[in-house]
Image 1: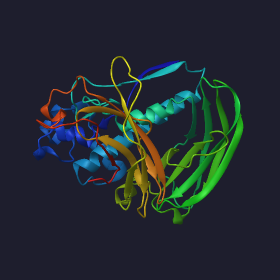
Image 2: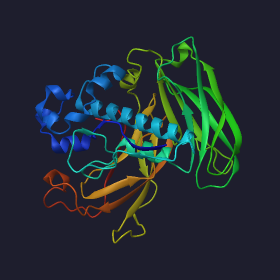
Image 3: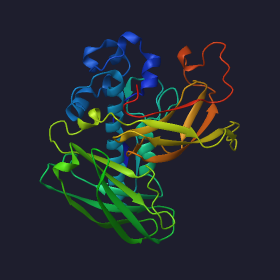
Image 4: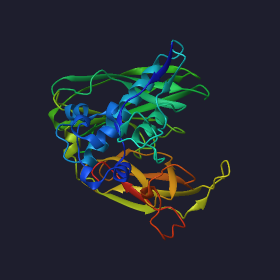
Length: 353
């Protein structure tokens, strides 16, 4: 079987919405109730879907970000399931990579103006040569029940090796509740079942909990926010509602180095820089990601949409190149007369203003 076309809808980034929508239209809305939003993406409305998972959506910014969470999780789930069917399934193609029109919501992974969505990074990770995945059947897990899910390790283009996967369970407050290690012989170009993850869902976990899967690299676990993270709620009704109240993440960002010229690609010059991001808040900082703010550069990160637990930190390297095409809107260009010699990077998370 070849899974030739599948996709998930997700609202555009806050930055793109601010470019294509007049400030009067910066609202959280279903497509059917707003002609401008409908004009920019009627087929792909996610408001009702997202309300069922997260509850009331207070503003456009939260709506856009939670919609992208669902799109990313849906695509990751599909790609991981396809990889678990390896050789019974010959491949899969996500619809779609990019878009020819600036949509307010769509199935694309890369937006019209060139910015990668959360789904881009989630899908890229799910296709990684070495990848640990969790086979779960529900996104809600009631207190008092036992949580059960299977752990798999995927290998593609790498040699066979003994590998370990660590499964860490964090409560809503970001504290470690459980940790389990799985190990097995990971054959080359195969998917290997490593075992079943089981633990009691206790009230101390709070309204939601996280399961983080990390593969060892050189015999060590990185433990720096780069794990494959799965989110579960403890209520069957709006299971992801705790995401919107989890607001006390506070980011501290520092540059590790200066901008450096990277290897040119097809005539385009690239600039690279690494940043360290730390969560100084009392609760997890959800889905941390860099944003290029001058509108003069396209940007891709080595990883993005990380979740940093309290006190946790991660290093993120960004690669930027001067825009050579794309957006027709003046808002997709630097301000008139602005001197933009180098990219400028901000780091945001779910609750950034």
